[in-house]
Length: 422
Ligand SMILES: Cc1cc2nc3c(=O)[nH]c(=O)nc-3n(C[C@H](O)[C@H](O)[C@H](O)COP(=O)(O)OP(=O)(O)OC[C@H]3O[C@@H](n4cnc5c(N)ncnc54)[C@H](O)[C@@H]3O)c2cc1C
Image 1 (spheres, rainbow, N blue to C red):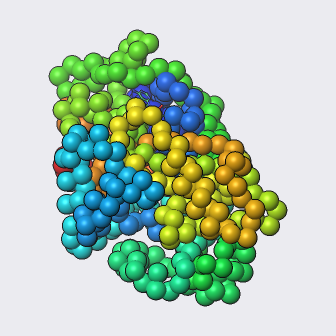
Image 2 (image 1 turned 60 degrees about the horizontal axis):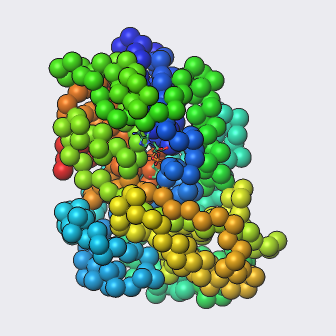
Image 3 (image 1 turned 30 degrees about the vertical axis):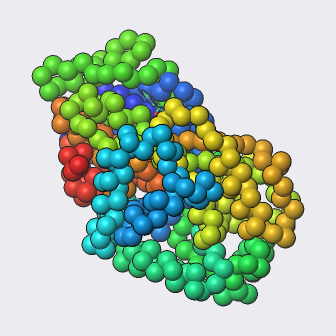
């Protein structure tokens, strides 16, 4: 039990971060209400559609030295892995400027990688323990994560990324052509060099995972309310209640775990967080027997191909546009086209996509999440902005949010994730 008395805590959002926060709060003896307008684990959440990777290697930020040189190309190439929709460019300029500056020097990206490593390093173990605790250990598989390259020279072009991974203590195994073929026979002969990060794990059904975690929280006594948080009732700096579209919910504390939608809530508490959607896509395809069996990131596709309970999930693409801009399904075709090259010996055609999805990575320009107390009230805890790594880091973020609620010294240094760093 925490040092403080048990309190009533409202968790806003039931994606992976909200679900893990609720479970950790219950573990500390608090009374928990979760509010979520959609289905927990449903398609509206990034936690439904991501690439399924739980990877301590994900410490490499998107913004790296020299990226600015490629921005004009990104604007012009509709088939690249990163696209900025023209009509949003003016609105996005402040975020983009910060994004490019965050990766401008080696020192900055090293600092980012080191901060990310603190929350990623034990992510596979935390997920395995969590899946085990809800009686569904099959949801998390730890069989390593593979990066496939056409050759060693292509690997060498990513020297800085692998430098950052080494800096954070990651260990990996290099695979020559024969070992690569043995590991994933379905890969096209175009790939002749591989890197296997054996510590990595993946999830086989993210939607079921999140909904099961929320059901577990409900079984342990949490209340799930289908509503949308719209604001806060404060008395001075003390929280009285969370306002929702279905009425107020009186409470002592709240954890904002609403992914990309957290921005407007934080604004009401005096924090202007530069949070934008890095929209991403996935396509799911059936694969024949003997087809791809392991998670792979082909270096020339910048995408994660992961076997799941529903088929092979091809996920990736970064599209900078507003949350409500309609999806551009051509971006899924890009993923499908690349998969046909990646597995050229396997019969894959475009029309076998059994699911297409678009969702929102909740992204800050420096690639780090926001975990800390709101400026306007110490009773409000932020747990959002995890960008590309929020699924992997969900369990530790839940723990850190619960530590903040209970005013315990947090398990990790939260300075790099401060809401006031912008
Ligand atoms: C294509 C793609 C690939 C990715 N691949 C990976 C990967 O391989 N590994 C990895 O670790 N991460 C990956 N990510 C990132 C990861 O998916 C996210 O960082 C993570 O899921 C964010 O979780 P969350 O709980 O913060 O937000 P979400 O999952 O978006 O959940 C937020 C929830 O809050 C609810 N909500 C919104 N507004 C309100 C409100 N006002 N009141 C109450 N509830 C509200 C929403 O309905 C939603 O259910 C990927 C993302 C994408 C898009």
